Image 1 (cartoon, rainbow, N blue to C red):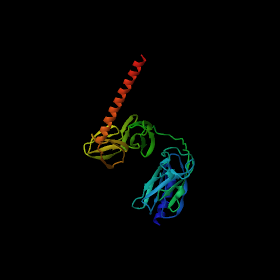
Image 2 (cartoon, one colour; image 1 turned 180 degrees about the vertical axis):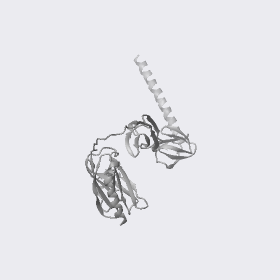
Image 3 (cartoon, rainbow, N blue to C red; image 1 turned 45 degrees about the vertical axis):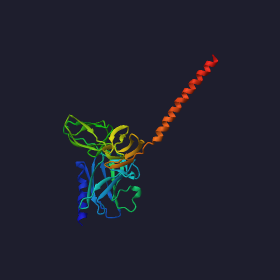
Image 4 (cartoon, rainbow, N blue to C red; image 1 turned 90 degrees about the vertical axis):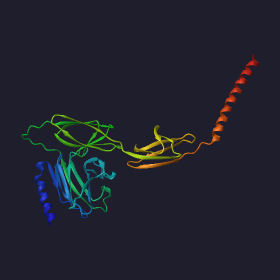
Amino acid sequence: MKKGYQCDRIMKTIQTARCAGIILIGCLFLAGGAAAVAGIQVYMGDIVTLQGYSTGSPTVYLFLTGPNLPVNGVALDNINARADEGHFTEVDVDSNDHWIYHWGTNSVGGRLDGGAYTVWVVDSPTDRSHLSGTSYRTISVGIDAPYVTVATQPVPQALGIMVLSSSPNESSVVVDNAYKGKTPLTLEGLTPGTYNVTFSRFGYYPFFTPVKVEPGSVSDVVARLAQQTGGLVINTSPAGARVMIDGVDAGVSPFTYTSLTTGNHTLNVSSAGYTSEELTVHIILNQTQTINLILVPVSPYSKLWVAVLGLAIVLAGVIVVLLIVKYRSRNH
């Protein structure tokens, strides 16, 4: 009875929340079976507050279907991230089995077309084509173009600009959970305040920083991302072998290399009197692996045969020269 009372209160709030630009949807339960929540109509740019209860999972997974979107759905916060490729908007369920998510309809990594959409709430990371055996609910949301009203408006405050760059270049930028593009990047028309900015790129650790935007000013941010690394321990028998990594002298064995970038690297190991070794190692993030090499001595007979072969080549050359001289002397 208490939850029903909460539903009545929330649905009444829906009727009065539009003036604040926020739409509330409540009364979602994931106790088993599927059901749909009555649809609502919002305008592009509204913030839709989704909330409900889940008793079977510590996390609920949200995805969206609708006009010009993949049939199996996309994440609510990034319409370029497909649900059938493992992308969802994940929301934690609190200790009271309650969850809540504020969906900004203009912060979705693109632009939504006007029309009828469906928000899917599932108790596991499952797209639309694999819902059998899961607990889920659906919410119908109609999105209209923003409405226009004529009213006296206060004089707007001066806006700010954010200029973002990074090393390495072309790092992805997310501002307050909304993807904005890749560096170098200039964001104009920002309301003064503090923004949470994240830079990320494959093979590098993410870089997080708050950025304060002042009225009528430019905030410059330069992010230097650290490469993701792993470790390598090299032991040789005998010790004292020269080790080169990717053609660069790294030292003499045994030694530990603690800051190799992740991925494949080429090792060359050499020692006087032994056969050189070359191998490829794959460095894994935050892991240290050990390479043990036993070097093979070079046979003394190999050196003798090399010397004999060299002498034979020299003698053959001398004989050829003598024959040529003799031939020319006969012809003259």
